[in-house]
Image 1 (cartoon, rainbow, N blue to C red):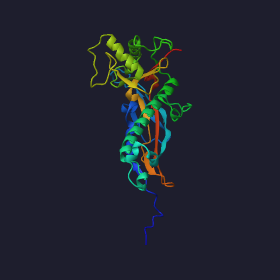
Image 2 (image 1 turned 90 degrees about the horizontal axis):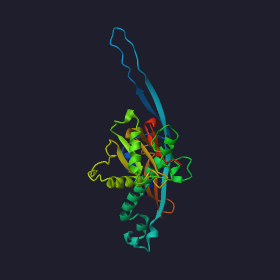
Image 3 (image 1 turned 90 degrees about the vertical axis):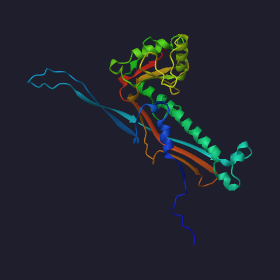
Image 4 (image 1 turned 45 degrees about the horizontal axis):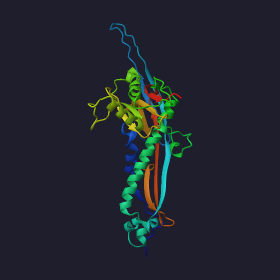
Length: 313
């Protein structure tokens, strides 16, 4: 007699689903934004706003004020990352010393390589998600940007507050000489209704962040230090956040200032949908398949609470 395994699926090593959750919920916007899970395709984000109208305290009751419901739709894109790895390709190179002895060893990823590979792959995916969160466009010809719309496209389609009040042009661009004035102008453009919020963030390209630091030093503000603390726009309550997600080449710079709580990141978060699998090719039994599937999307709750910066052509 022998084991009858015909009704069983081939063994698949599922690397922890929490790895996907961690990759999606850390780095860039996800560090501070709202996270909405359970979205398979699209979902409406529901909001309530109300005002107050004072009335006289008398024997006659007069109702006043208004409460308004509104909603924004967040749409997530279904994303997959796949790679085929053949351990035999390591033979003849230094990495062959890590492969286990015997033919069976060529069917397993060396543990030393797997640990580094997984870390690098997760970091690369997180970095790309940061770029897509800002620059995503379902109409883009760039594959990695085409799965969901990012904040810049959403901002450009709405009525955000103009943060380029000085009409800085593409030709002038952002420099060490004008960066302080430009960022101060964005702060001044914050709507009064949210100016005292404790979660305001100004998202800037890495290149602009570096120019800002240089400008502070050139202004002899040596007493200003953010060691161990979140950097603030000098003299304000606004967190200054550097990101690779925003375009930063000279003449292309974009920036966004809003409350952290005004940004929502949508994902599924279902272990049946968001998965990482590392498995042996069931047909050839020679290659190792790496597969990740997940969903992602972003939305701004209130576009009129966003200050955006775009250079004038």
